[in-house]
Image (cartoon, rainbow, N blue to C red; front, side, top):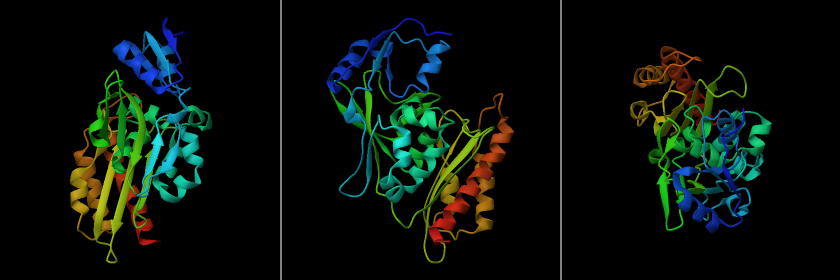
Length: 291
């Protein structure tokens, strides 16, 4: 199939791109990597009247550390560039480890960090990762700039807090602490497919394996990625061992209220969600302990 007719704009300066979004509003769609937008247009699931191609805005494609040691990435940064970055691997290992789960090499070569986040597919890895890392998103329009936390950004299926006239310009990841353990787990029908269910975990324990910090985010289990607050509360301040993680897995399964589709039933996702959470936390514990 072919897309419906549209007007194509390729601004070479950020202010010009923001002016186009202000002018066309809901009628416009931003083209970054195009790995999600183009198939949707070809199947006419999306019919934008105007395409604003931001690929000629090099200031949106960058990876840098802040003075405090956090990470700032431009929204147009290619996923493959993040995957191959030695700085990311050294200073933000969970981000580096998550990127290879996204599709295949050709997809990651064109796919962008910001594009995946704004598309907000609930089965995608990066939205859940941003929750677990408590990232912040910088949104710009022709008249203002605002910063939105990841927990406030994802509203429902393929829907975010970004306004029609706004552009996601950069993603801010807080300082990574070397004592954190981490892991990402997912199950999919084939390698490179969207996850049926996945989990991202960050864990910090003391010398007695008492939990000092825990973040647990799941994807593929509803309209948005979710933080499992009840499961996190169970672990915080408690000794973390296999028995505790089995109980956490039960709570995760109870807490989830996933949708069913042609790929998996709701009951399957509830059960596997608990398993993915337990496995991710087990691996995070091993890393936190230095095993």
